[in-house]
Image (cartoon, rainbow, N blue to C red):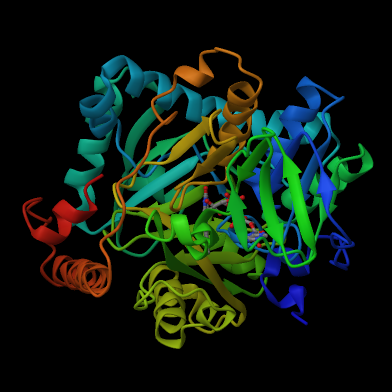
Length: 463
Ligand SMILES: Cc1cc2nc3c(=O)[nH]c(=O)nc-3n(C[C@H](O)[C@H](O)[C@H](O)COP(=O)(O)OP(=O)(O)OC[C@H]3O[C@@H](n4cnc5c(N)ncnc54)[C@H](O)[C@@H]3O)c2cc1C
């Protein structure tokens, strides 16, 4: 049996003994059956229950609540999507892109509001966001981001800072400029997810753990859709697929998402002297302009979390617990901590973990409900799910209840991504993109020159 405490620092420190809840013991009937007790499934159950307490809601989870990305992430609760406003505007129009961006700011606040209202000690702290350029090479990208925010009317939320202002706020070796905003928060992902699960359970919503769904069947002639499990079927007019990367394990969705690993290292609590040098008193979420992605947060107990991508995609999209450890990538992340914060050259690292992101072929998240099949889903957040899952829960609630609201008019609603290529083309394409982005980052760091924006790697990652 999996020792769930070892999955992440967040689960280990969630004030919860992680004992699995009882599994399904025979077939069950419900009004809404949800696959997955991550933040998507739990927020969907939460808002449905708030909207109509008479609904019988069942959540079916293969492991335990928070086992997936929701209990493992980098703690950023930020108003960002992996798809840019410009691209949303090209696909759906300028107004839709603007409404979408506003919905992401609202989602951050709603996570904080709901956690506080429900007494969930989720560690929500709205300290803001800092994106740094280490060296001059990232500055054009920061300026482009600011120009994009201005174009869509959000420019007043962002500021470019440098020099003493940046240094006094956050001291990172080589940082020259940064784009800062107040609109992001940091959370404790373990306490948020487990706290939400406990709240739902108290309110009478069944969370069946240790119950894998092996097949999903659309509505039959009796109007019932089915989650098939080895322990019996869960039948309901509506089923919600809230399994993110793991949905790729179900046959019809196999090519809708690829699981791509994001990995994290965590330091011991940093000494007061080092904090005096580093600053970071606002506990902002932090990243750099590197193309191959990094993300940082400061924990409540004064540790530094450094996350990034780089673990290689594996042929056929398998998902295994063993992939949460990737020595070379974890070691590279530790090297980044030492390089960014030289005063921490001797710091100890206490944790290293990771998990799969759900990556759609077009980098476009989807929130959808098809009344013909009875199947709803919210997925494809890539690295930006902590706030977006909350939005997904509210959107699915409105869709399932047949309400037409501003949320159901958002451009993510009803989207269907095209499938990934069959293997081995998927493997070759993703491995190439991973290699090319890493190489380009190394070249940018070596030369100090900004990327041209024209390389194949950049075009692949420009979303
Ligand atoms: C290492 C890492 C760092 C990240 N950092 C950030 C960050 O800092 N900020 C941010 O916004 N986003 C981040 N993300 C992304 C974010 O965590 C996810 O987008 C979000 O948590 C997805 O939530 P979810 O509920 O949709 O999926 P998950 O949390 O993955 O939950 C899916 C659940 O479904 C269950 N399940 C799957 N298949 C089945 C099945 N067949 N039967 C039964 N149960 C099943 C799983 O066990 C799991 O519990 C990160 C992700 C990772 C992996």
